[in-house]
Length: 263
Image (cartoon, rainbow, N blue to C red):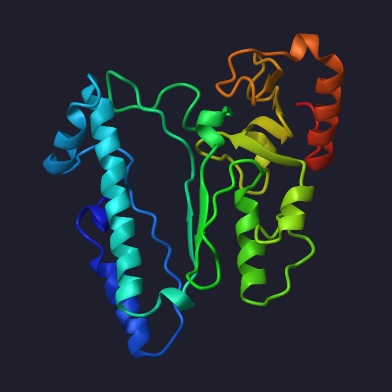
């Protein structure tokens, strides 16, 4: 709910205190309802951003992001203060993108819930002092499906062969990967055992190219879209009509990843 983060991290700290008292390992899933709406940042943070944009809703969103960042700092500070940092792996990942509207606290088109980069491109960060050296990689492809294989490998557990992700600490595996895949479903999935019933789009990023294939069951009027995301990161120029061979090849990749019959 709205309490966690906005009103402090006491429940999280109490849980970790209890784990230490009982000498047990712990797992914390910290997913606060921020910077999601309602955008109600502290005045001290809102004042910091009001002069950086003429649009108050955007200033509120930026302030919410910093407020969330502060809570992450509190969480990491707890680990440092209690000498737990070197024995704790921290993973940071977002569930979707958000580009705020100028006139209201709403997400803009081509951001949250969309098949475009504004809705799916997010950072994944790992923190493990003494084990992971600080590094930023903005070149190679990564996906949230890589989190589990990376963590299992880090703690010495065999990765099940059925998992499609890779160990992001394996430089050779990261270099070898050429494509990642994803799907966009309806916000409220109809059938957990039948994801196709709620499928809107499938997509692939292969090198510098991204193909988006609509599913006719939910998006009968949408067109196939092909973007060169290095030259066109905001996906403004659909090249599908002039790159028929590439569209065919990338569609075959998507179908090999997740074959979906026409409705």
